[in-house]
Length: 108
Image (cartoon, rainbow, N blue to C red; front, side, top):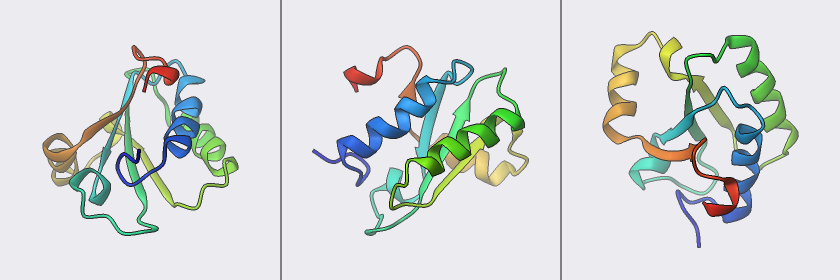
């Protein structure tokens, strides 16, 4: 079964990267995949929550996601570092949970 237009293997692969970084408390997906109006090949917009997350850790996470060789562009951010009020409002309005530290990968 697909969620956000992504197969279970893709979601599991991304969440496995997140799980290896305990500073990530949760992640929301937003944009077309959260709204349900995505197309084949639409990018994956994700924002991360965790007060201890740093930009250098974000770079490591981006590299690990890139190493997965997924057929999607992944745009990833740290929510508390986003400066655009319009973007944070959009994420809060339509964002859907993608990952949670309290929910093991194999239970998603």
